[in-house]
Length: 475
Ligand SMILES: [Fe+2]
Image (tube, rainbow, N blue to C red; front, top):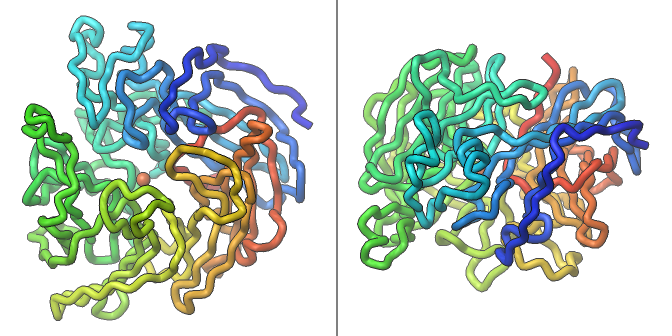
């Protein structure tokens, strides 16, 4: 049983929305709490686990004026700390300038990325987030060097303490705030971080090369043909691989009654191979598709292998009439200017993860959520999953753990200490039961994910459906 818990902040969310992406387990929560000695309802927490699983997600405190999931909101971090077979929990908002502005106003003042909204400068103040879209730092949470960083989408990121106090906008050792994307990649040899920030106004993405201690070494631009949405990329030992799908921003479009963000398949998808020193990229052309997330990328002889979730177009609803997003592999042969693409699995998915020790190095196993026929609850929100699948990318074999009527999120791989086999570890995933409105953190054996869970840990409050997280071993 939970021995005790205490509230750090009591304000509940006092509004409701008819937006499916703000309803059910997508509805935000208000209280920031801490709870020790979480209840384990099945199995046992492996005593050798020492570290914290943190996860970020959009959790708007005030009822939004405009909202586009998953591209708006206030960040909230949920953290489960493991030590000696016990677990404790804490959650906190990321205290961004945008959230502080809205707290001063007592209401939402920013627009959405799909509906930018001018903000009254008097509300923002001299040090506020000027908008028109809030920099919410709601997508990911990453530790690099001694820095814990909450990340948004091509926005200022926020450094936090391991107990989730917000320190402030991260400057990576410079005099100014740097904008970062939600997904950043660590070099397997140097430990340096490569980060990307795209522009919604200019046809350019900026890469930041950050050393292993968290100091910016250099930034370099890559020129595109249109301002493009690029949510993720992959690194190999020698190359940044940038997939630029035809999801473009057109700043003139809203005045003509057209959307700011558009799917323009006639532009095709371009694959950029960018040397890590920022010298001129080489571009290859492919048929139009879109990528939100990559599982991994690596070199294999003279080939570059890229595993990713392929979207046939932008905005495909999972399980809808169009071809759903699925795990695919690109094999790029730069010497022959050729690109081959093959499906690796035939189920709807998103949020692919691997054992991050294999990031930018050859990897065999991917772990992905999916939705199965055992889910029997009417839930109108997008991005609903109820099962996790381990895919062997060499054999095509799949192993599934089905959670039935519980809604799952991104699986995060926790490596077993002192073991080096790629799949020696645990998968951590939040599972929400709509019938009891309760959340569990489920730990699965990554070698045999179809087995009974290693541990089911009851959360002391509902954990809303979020986006990305990471395991941070005690260092
Ligand atoms: Fe993402």
